[in-house]
Image (cartoon, rainbow, N blue to C red; front, side, top):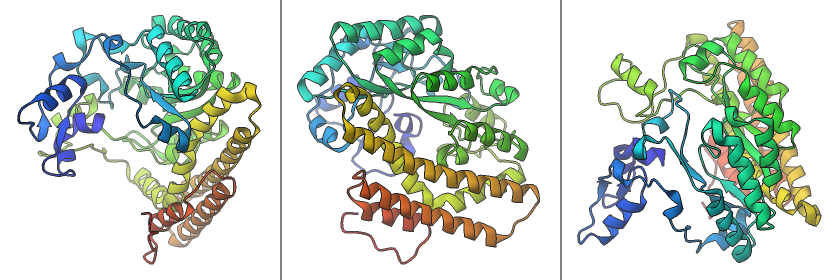
Length: 427
C-alpha cells in the first residue's frame, strides 16, 4: 500500500519493534523474507526487479477467510491491474516501480473472468469490488478492454455486480455501455476541481471530461461517488462555493467531498517541488498539507469541527454503499426484495446526512464571506450534526444495516468531544 511504500519509517514507529515492512509489491520480497534463515525486522529491502511484469503469472489469492467476509459485507475484493496511467502531481503512484517503464499492467480479461467464475462457483460470490487504481488502463485501449471483459463474463454465463475506480478520460459511451453490461453498478471518479488552471497544475486534464463522465455514468444507472479537492493553496471562498454548488446539484456533496484538503504524499511531484522550495521542513516525515489562504483555512477548520460528530455515521454508510449496490446488481434478476430495501434505506440515511453537510457548508461559507466568527452559530450547527448522526445510527439499526450500534454511537460521542463517553465492551 501507499502508506508502507512512501512512509515506511513512520509506519515502523507505530508497529512492534520486530515487525517487518515491505514496500511496493510484496510477493517476491515476502517469499525471500519467509525463506530467510534470519528474517529481518524493519523495512525490508526491495527493488524495481521485484515488480511483476506479467500479472497472469501470479496465482489467484488464497481465499481462506472469504466466507467470513462475505457473511459480513457480501463482497469479494479482486485486483485486475496494478499501477496507473495518470501522472497526477499530488499522487505517489507515478513514483512507484515500473517494470520495463510501464506505468500500468493489466491482467488479461480471461484471467480475471476465470477468477470471478471460481469465486461464484466456490463461494457464491457475485458482488465484486475491484481495488484497482485504474481498471481500464491506457486510454486508447480502454473501450476494447471493457468490451473484452463483458464478453469474457458472458462466455462463462456469469452474472455479477461490481464497483470500480475509473479514470474519467477512459469513459466513452461505448466503454460505459460495455461496463454496465458486464455488471458495473458503482463507480468512483476523480473530478478533483472545476478550475482549469488548478487542474493543469496538478497534471490533470483541464477539460470537462470528468464531469461529463459522471453524468454519463449516472444516466447509465451507475451509482457514482466523486473525488474532489476543494481545499488547496490556490482556492478562495468563491472557488469553494462554486465547486460545492456543482457537487450539490449532482448529489455528490458529502462529508468527504466537503472536507477534502490537498495532502502531498512523499514521492509525489508536488511534494518534491515543495521540499525543494523550502516549504517542507528538513526531516519532515509523512504527508504534507500546504498552507491555505486565511479565509479558506477558517472555512476548512470550521467544517471539520462542526461536522466531526457526523463523520462516523457518514463513513459507516459510505463504506456499505458500494457492496449493497453490487449485491443488488448481481441479484436483480432474482427479485431480491430484501437487498433492494436495504439499499433504499442506506441511500435514504446517506441523503439525510448529506443534506446536513450542505446546510452546514452553505452557512459557514456565508459567515466566512462576511467575516463573522461567531461561535454560537457553529455550536448550534455542531449540535445539529450530532443529532443527525445519532438518528442515522438508529435508522441503520432499525433496517438491519448495523448490528453493533453501540460502537457507532460511541464513535459519534468521541468525535463530538463528549468527555463522558463510555466505551462498549466490544471496543
